[in-house]
Image 1 (tube, rainbow, N blue to C red):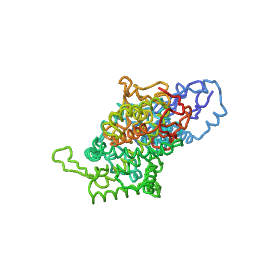
Image 2 (cartoon, helix red, strand yellow; image 1 turned 120 degrees about the horizontal axis):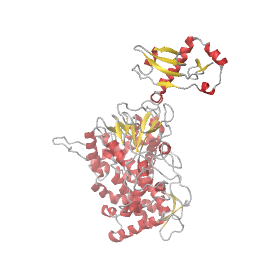
Image 3 (cartoon, rainbow, N blue to C red; image 1 turned 90 degrees about the horizontal axis):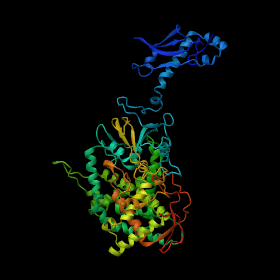
Image 4 (cartoon, helix red, strand yellow; image 1 turned 30 degrees about the horizontal axis):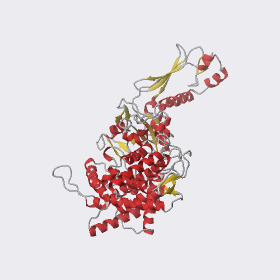
Length: 600
């Protein structure tokens, strides 16, 4: 009795197994179909050797037992029908099947270009979730109310079991997420090297909006080092220390504005955003803006400009017609015009105490004997000023908004912050100084713990120039590398809890861990890592310490939301921000009028 081979639709003996294998001759490939101990049929397929780029193949072997024969079922009518197929048609079917077999080995390279391994390396790729063909994980950088920004990446990580390394495919790019401080250090250890890794300026849209000549995107090692020295001179401890009185004045202004609304609902996010923007125009840029319309115009345009950070059109790998008419670019043009006005004033009047002035007049004699003195170009001054505005506003305002929420949820922590400030006031008086801020050890631990639980999600994307190996896994050439800060904090063995409570706002917030060597976090990346670690770190810490110290010295507050309420997040923000902006009711001190239930 004859039946049908379910793979090739040719008649074979039902009493014997069917097998299919590739046969190779010096001139061609073919299929050898065996339908019993003595029956076989060779089908030459000379075109197959061109299906995978014309290179010689080592064809796989397929073998199977005919399931219809095992079942003992005869399908003679169908057998008779198919046995009558024209021999040429049979060969076409065989050819199509052969192509399927070969292409099944290559489908990832076709559907997700660039996602395959570097075959010159023996190490395997990290665990992968590639998403839709050609497009990949189109929601990788999207947010959610439950998680906050970048929920898509966290979702992929959870799906794969939260590995230290995992691979995605997004908008035509293979991306490897790397977490764990040692792994990230390994990935960044060859930054700037020809066979290493370097920061990738995402595209022309991003360059137009945020500046392509900042220290953040310089790819040459020596030029980058020089840029860091020049820009860093404006961020030195002494330079920041000099700015403390001016920053304190801005903080007191904002806290006083809250006290004027005593007993009413105040959104902390609005207050701290105005605070950091005030520092941006007064201290970073040194602008002499009049209160009212001019200040409001600066704030409005800066906020509009920052919306570009999460606009998906900016991420596209080509220039979008009409993009520069968007409010983000109008805000950019306003800020550039203000910086140009300030530079013209500095040319006329000489240096002042602003951060912009320190950058503009900074000189670098180089790190090699005989090297010439360098200064920042005008464009470099503009682009680095914009980067410092981002560092000094987005990071600080987001962290202060979350810190205020946590201090409202944990009244014992808030009281410890207030006690520390009372002691410092009695010792030094009301005026803050660099020395006082260094003695705010508990306040410092509050800020770090806030940034541990709700950090910036990840660092700037890098791109591999050659294949690198991290934690026993290969990251192929031309891959994007995402240093995953949130995942690094999640996996820190010094704080890790199996139930994830160590990253839970209502269960895991414990500033005291930073003061206990036995419990202190071992993997903290609040301001990045490597040669591109945030230059605005000192300024951001100073801003945050001064605001919270001023808040603790002048007022108390109660959260509007109940501690039992679920905390939801702004899914479109660049960093974590509660969706209600942390609404509070300010008061001038005394015993809390509203009981909270979370205590240490």
